[in-house]
Image (cartoon, rainbow, N blue to C red; front, side, top):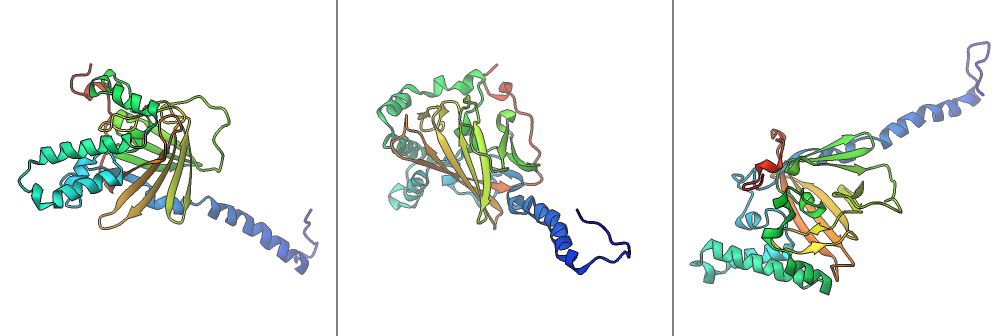
Length: 275
């Protein structure tokens, strides 16, 4: 226990101790600083709500909800081929969608193939007012707001008005957990990249276009990076599922920084033909 001398003068031997005590709160404050997360905070919008921005190309509209880079490159190759100059754009888009389905099929297990063949646009759960599962929510092109709240990162999605919590305090995934729509997410920043690891999600689809589906054993790693000119958020999402995938499946997507955008309240009734 430190005591103050009667003279009111601190002995020299106490100075190092006092310096350590003063430095401790400062170190803690710096460790909890929002600075590493600051580039990722704010509102970001995909191609749907920023379609007039000259940054986007035709391939971005094809991959509006995210797609593997192989699919994007395939569409670019079709557009760059002079032999396709007279082909309707819709035809090229359809060919790219076919390539996307085949690309996913090439990494599916037998059960994964059965799921893909059974899925159709008509039996999509969203048509029955069931919100998107994890993959389709994480790659959704509608606006989202990323903010910090204590030791959590909160991602507010306009689509389905869902709120996702990401733990930043270093905790692991729980050993036993009940699967949920968006799962259990933990995050960190490494070398300027926001990394989010997610597990414990309910079974759903990979995307609307591929019709493929995943099991509740899916695990995911999101890698977000921020770039300028224009300021944008880029995602690389790596998916692993021992039930449906024979190897990791990677989806990429991009959002532009749109601080002026206000997220609207989404509802099932907003979908055409859904009541």
